[in-house]
Amino acid sequence: MNLPGTPSAASHRIRTPAQHHVAGWSIAIVLALAAPWVIYPTFLMKVLCFALFACAFNLLLGYAGLLSFGHAAFFGGSAYVCAGLAKHVGLTPELAILAGTAVAAALGGLFGWLSIRRSGIYLTMITLALAQLVFFVALQLPFTGGEDGLQGVPRGRLLGFIDLGDNHAMYYFVLAVFALGFWLIRRTVHSPYGQILKAIRENEPRAISLGYDVNRYKLLAFVLSAALAGTAGALKALVFQLASLTDVHWHMSGEVVLMTLLGGLGTLVGPAAGALVIVALENELADKVGPWVTVIMGSIFVACVLAFRRGLVGELLALRGRTDIDPS
Image 1 (cartoon, rainbow, N blue to C red):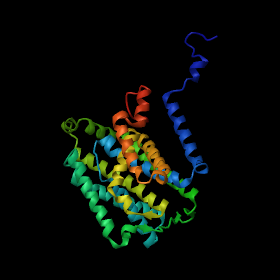
Image 2 (cartoon, rainbow, N blue to C red):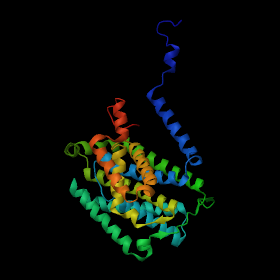
Image 3 (cartoon, rainbow, N blue to C red):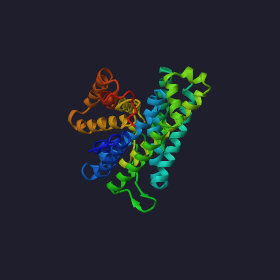
Image 4 (spheres, one colour):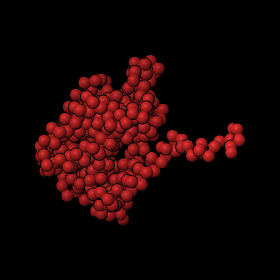
């Protein structure tokens, strides 16, 4: 018998939202650690690379409201830099990835500086044009391999003693980098800076009236997004031991937009879910329908825009009655 004012045993068993949150992340971590022993590791690594790419793009579009159609330049440019340094200079994998990330961040600063003075479709077209310049450079420079790309890129040894030639070792390295990148994005979104980005997205004139240097915040968002996209591209180059024109083609920019919208724009885990769906579909359908994969992806995009405007994760959150679209 419980005395008045004394919490019952049932009340002790009720979990708080924070406890559910911790339990959910714990399950996700366990599943991620066990996954390569059940599923082909190379497929999982590809999913993680594109998940980081999509999350980086979402930081710019979903939280800052800036639609860049040139993110393939950061992804592919970093891939070429990482692959070239690893193959021709013999740089260790961690240093090659850092170099690729730095180049992508520099490109992001340049793209952002040139494009943020415009908005809407004009900003999008400027980023597309700049990305096509990067594609042309990758096609013409002799050390990029032209249409053949950079092949036979060595994975090397992480920190000098971990052989990344082993798929499981490489998977856990990619998983660690993805986790670090995802944590950085989550920390950014929930920081005061992230709140200012949301304010700029929702009402830029009001943010200006409050005294914020809007262009400076936008430029920093461009650099952060580009750097993380570059990290994803460098990782992909090491995973597949290849950097090719596909990585810098405008189709890649369109694909990351599709992943983000399909998973859930403005959510943290939505772009990663979208990347999983798109990569899985491409892997399953590529050898069955051939070039019709592009048509199928386009149909999925149209269906998503018409019927699931919040994306997969956004719709699930709406069904749960959440008023916000940030699942964290």
